[in-house]
Length: 400
Image 1 (spheres, rainbow, N blue to C red):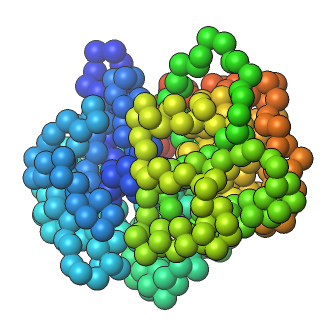
Image 2: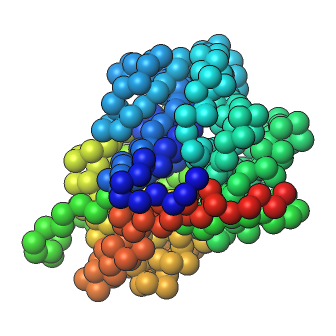
Image 3: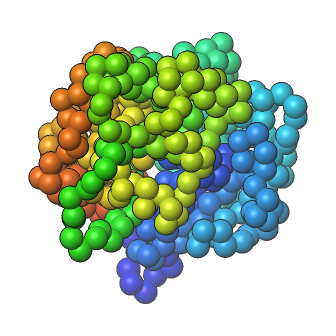
């Protein structure tokens, strides 16, 4: 194959991911945005997935044939839905498995997102059989925190199939150097790889940033999952309430999660006497999400592990400074740009930071937040680099 020219056929890239449900968080959202940006560059990019929607199924996504979903070509197959949560999470799909060997050669390259899930695992196996090269984005699943979850199952899958999938990938795609370092440490060796961040759409900002009045607005916007450590933030706010009882603030909590876990969080707010200050908004998307981000004074994410942190970058794009833990991989960039603060995910430490900055961020920090998003995380820049990487991968020798 020769490099494409303006008159040649566009590069055909199939993105494979277990789910594109917005309830699955950043990775699922990012693949739609990535394909959108690539198609604007005339790359013939499409998505292969299932109709997974966490514990349920997407009702607005047709299955079994190509369709346009969120503005991009998507082929989804039904996900097997057994009563056991662990089996549902594996996203087994017989239809997807039947489709792959008959159609995978129609594509120049596969860009696979995720490990330890049937669609991704099967796609890499079929790609090797068909001699179609693939790029693998591990989405942070080889971080110490992630590997400690369902440890026995992941260790077995690494041994049986995923280590070979990783080893024989044309390249690994990491979104930060921290993610790259954690992966290589977990595997005990390095592999051909590229470090390229995810992008974010840049919303239009108000023409004039007027001083905010009233309560300091704190925002937690993410999947409600133990990894995100919302409990740490709630306990920090309880300490803040004790230390400065007259401080005016509210916490908006946007996101969805397992009902049992959500119930435990709500119970914790009651026990900490925070119920009147915490506003549970559920899953938020689209313009409502953008508005929420722009109205916040601080965006907070004290996560235990975050290979990238797409919600953090969305906050920056909205001109909202962030307070994040060092385990959020973009933390170093945020701190270096003066676009927010980095704080240990410890209630006492986080309380102290909030006490010191309870008047909200400065105008300079807001400008720095938006500037960082524009210069580093715009989709146009990311897609340009990704297309170049695709061509380089297709024309580089396989050394393993």
